[in-house]
Image (cartoon, rainbow, N blue to C red; front, top):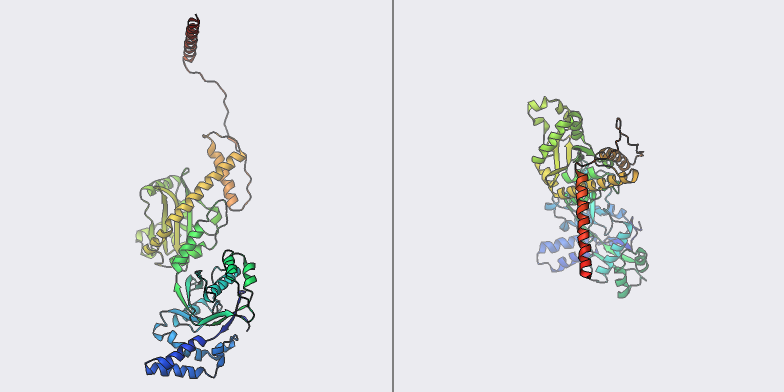
Amino acid sequence: MSNFHKKESPFQVFISFKKYLDVLEHIRYNDRLEYRANYAESLIEKTKNFKELRDGFQDLSLFEKHKDLIRLLLADLFPTGLTRNEIKAAGIPLTNITFNYTERFQNILNDAGKDFEIEFRDISDDEYYVFCCCLILQTYLKKDIKVTIPFYYDIPDKNGIIKHYKITVNSDFSDVYPAEGTLIPEDEILDMLLENLDDINLWKKYFPHESWILNGFSIISLVDCTSEVALSDLKSTLIRIDPENPAPDENLKEIFKSYFDVADLNFGLMLFNTKNKRLEKLPIYENVFTNYLLDFWLNTFDEEIRKTAFENITYNSKPIVISNVDKLDDEIKKLPSFSILKDNQINSFMVIPIMKDGELLAIMEFTSPIHNSLNGLKLKKLEFVAEMIIFSLSRFSSEKNNQIEAIIQREYTTIHDSVIWKFRNEAEKYFNAYLSKKIYTLKEISFKNLTPLFSFSDIRASSEKRFNLMLEDLNQQIDGICEVITALN
């Protein structure tokens, strides 16, 4: 196999254990402990008939041929006592090909399924190519640069929850050097390249495809960073909630699953309309949100009860968290409203009012069919994104109001405050249709049984008052004229 890369690279990659065999040679002749020297010597003897292990190879079938020997050779790097704790493997540098897994790493891959393929997360072909070039600058050309692009693997567990693992790589057993005939760029060229990281054609000009050799193997360790990555993804997703760009992130529910570590989770949210004292759905998220509890509450209770509840929330906005609905009081289970839980297989839920400056902004709900999956600890994790949720929803509400006002001004005319509510309702229907990517034609606004009246009004004694003011004004002007004439004489 001539090329391990799915992505284009400046490297020709060869798998080689030369640098590690050199370490064993040093132990063989210099270690004071006889058993270690003998152990190193025995490993070297076992590999001496397989020159490809030292010289390097590209044929992946040799992995299977030498599988047991490679595991024996790397035993010191993978202690048996840590195999169930560390997520670790050997790998072909800068590829997704890994081998010699610890037991914990192998179990993670087994849970992901036989068809799962490890892939680097969120890195484009061009970014990968430039990253490889930067490694050449750092390792061979000794440029003082820090190549700190974080790499992650996204691997599903046995329950289907996407886990995010940060990759750390030990490259002590690999070498980078130019292939025969490769021209090494001058320092001025390297500085120019570093100023133009996005110019992929420029990088390929001075570091052509397969013009450098990468020889050896690497040690890959994974750290579970699911909460941190999911938290970052949540913040990035929430900040994109914007009426100007109605493109919902369909992965929002999956991100919450990873963040809460709950395999089966539904998420719902409704904005609170302060003027009308009612909850409203976000049309752009109709296919993402599942408002089991909020929908039931809206459809069951009349408007007066709902308004009273909203007023009470202002004074007591404590979230409701039920870990296991089966443990609710028998009296509660007898209520008709309890059926909504069983009908939708809700065995654990949270209902969370979102408050800003003491006023209700929205209500969120999380539901799951898994008993005890939602609890106070999950609610605590939500605090880390609370400010971003408040910011995003506040901005959405503000932008929505601005858009509706713009629709009224554009489609109608100047409207008196006493009747603007009817125009606003129609404008909201138009705006919600726009968010849902539906066509809606604004209807003509009319008022039944309404007769316009035109009249003049008069204030009592206003004529007399106006006459006295005119008389006072004339007297002041006459006095002024007299003063002017006197001054002239």
